[in-house]
Length: 284
Image (cartoon, rainbow, N blue to C red; front, side):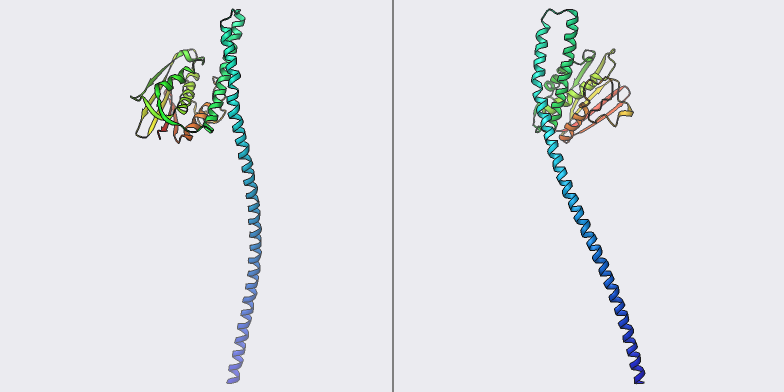
């Protein structure tokens, strides 16, 4: 009986030892597999770090290039004003001279082109201001600002055919950035005057209203409207939605950029023969 028990015990121990050896081999294999996975993961992390460093360096270079291009744009838009102003002055002097009919036609053509060039420079200046200039909040006279914006649009071909009506909702002053307000009004009213039938008289309505914290600006026109086919593109840079466009397709892009920088909103609707742009600007 003792021999039988000993044999059973020995057999049980051998069986257990075999299971332990098998378990150790399994653990060793798992350890090797984990080590291999660790090495692969380490290599992958190193590759990601290298790519991240490369991407960071590339982004820094792009940021530097963008800043340089922005500075060039800012300087160019200002420096080119002087020669354009000189051309305007020379053309004004020629206006008083005795010119032949052909010379007057050429003079008128040159005035139109200088006005167009001046408008392009103003667009570039507005774009630079939207990117660089600090927001300067102060009390602004609405009537003075919109009257200046309207006066600066009198070169447009349709200007004399359009009646502009302004309602202030008893507002006289608002707290905002005067240059931002001027640029928004000028761009939106310019579009309302430009995109319409040149042979028909029309109307543009500008409405101001105010809540406790926001200034609302509505510019409504009875022009040609905005086709649904181009509705998703009108705020894109350099997009010109019509052959009537006289600019470089920057106006609405600039307005949207300025409004977003002011943490405001812009929306529009075109139906029933009228197009409405509404801008909401916070007053603080």
